[in-house]
Length: 331
Image 1 (cartoon, rainbow, N blue to C red):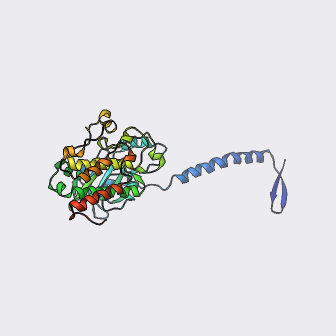
Image 2 (image 1 turned 135 degrees about the vertical axis):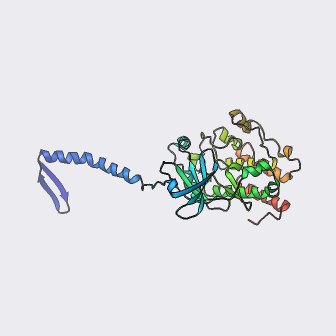
Image 3 (image 1 turned 30 degrees about the vertical axis):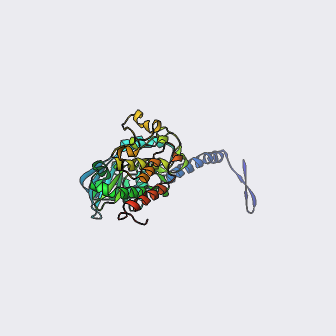
């Protein structure tokens, strides 16, 4: 059998036997398979170094526990710095990620470490533990959970209410500017430093503000702060965070929610089926302009709310300059 092969100097003929034909046939079949195999290996990316937390950190004391994580005050044995170490619950995280199958949802550490803002806790690193748990290392904040001040309605809360609203809104506006939907804005996810500055601390439910993550169907968040479109599994956007922010502002003023709250679907549907209780019902002497700003953020339909968080914060700042000029700034 003759094989004709073309080259730069013309065609050449080679004599080949049946064994050679078999060899060429095998190569034709196996080379593509081998190439696909190596492509898959290359796509896996670099090997992730897992961290044994007990060796890397001196876990001093537990300082918090969320619905999906535990947080320790810890000493970093490498830097000697006191930090907060947050470890995510592996089983709960798997259940959450099943809601985003086929979508490129960033892990909490990827989102958190990309954010740099005075009212957002600084994340220093993130990765996997030796037990395959996701962890984050953050600056340690000396202070209290914001929920404490909202619940106590003490002098600190009364004297800094508008300042707290502005700081919380600025943090949220920055998250939006970075192209995210937070999806879990509420006082529980905020801490207050010793010098009375707010820090947003949790990004476990945060998703990119892109069409695939705005699509109907996914209901995640804290029930009392859920926007009606989220409850109804409709198309969402960053305005669902404006709703949650408005609920938080309402709560700061009234020490109550705009609706009856609970963990049942019936209570969450109140956000859809009933208008919010007027803020003046709980706080008769509240500034009229401030009340209107917050109530607009609670509108049933997104198009009736503030278009952006920046808009809502600017309006609150106007009230702050009028009522609390000593606490206002020019940002």
